[in-house]
Image (cartoon, rainbow, N blue to C red; front, side):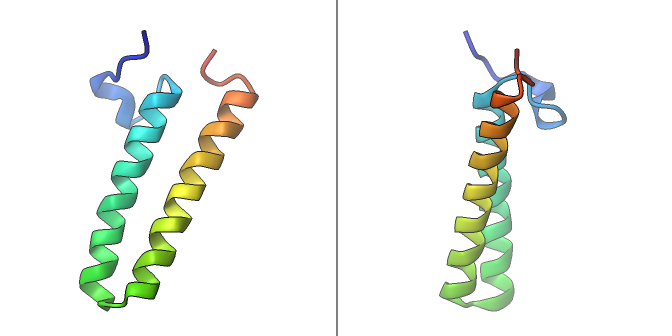
Length: 68
């Protein structure tokens, strides 16, 4: 079973942990961008970019066998 371990924030050991921490860090970044800019467009672009980067990164790592 893919469980999240306490050390997964340093080096994720499974795709679920990568997605979880990637999206968590994206949410933190989006909140920071919102408070700095108060711009919906900038905040939206930041959120989409973070989510896509996380998803593509997890997919590439899974394809090359990083989690095996």
